[in-house]
Length: 270
Ligand SMILES: [Zn+2]
Ligand SMILES: [Zn+2]
Image (cartoon, rainbow, N blue to C red; front, side):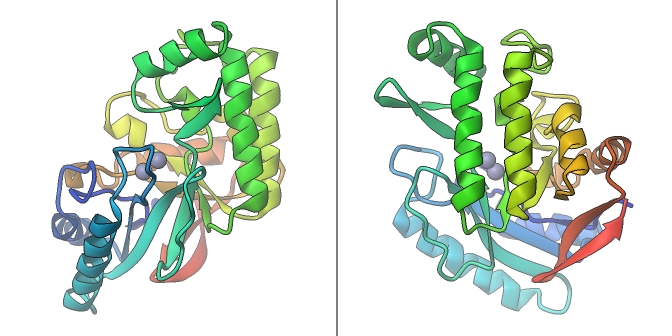
């Protein structure tokens, strides 16, 4: 089954194409029962995050839409927290924990802003060793899994966003797999929902969602709970790749996945 919901959605409050209300209308057209907003919470090192003033306006707008569309669709006020920024969970119905930045050599580098940025960070900060960069990233994933109070772990294999063709590094290399599978173990142990995220498909960076097969198989073996999300930045692709993501999850050993129905979580057969 493919979910009629999505809880990873971005809007014009930061880098999305459409307003929150346009996203609601798209969700209604798709027959969704639940749409959650997860704008980027304030991080002073990230110009793709809300300022505190913008965050105030975002919360007010989602609450306005919740009232306006009550009875038609469940709308949830969430946010995507970047692991290195101060958490501010108060008043949110759920939180997605993501790692978009990592520290190295006394600075922060971006994992997902662009392929060029990531490649330059590998050269400048990791002596051109991409596996060292991946170890740094996945160790932060493990740390966040152990310590976060968030409900959902966002795109835990983000280092693969620009690497589907394996031209930055080889994701079958043991140096990569060791770190990635340890992160999968941490994610499963945390008991949090783990995203199968199709956002990079919608934006043309990948043809398949992430995590990929190796991490998904490990997550399934360890009894992790998964949630399909589209990390949507464009109302035209609110359910992008859900059918493929569900098929991939099944092929990797999952029989069920989870979704929000309003604020409640429910398990469903894939
Ligand atoms: Zn993200
Ligand atoms: Zn996102």
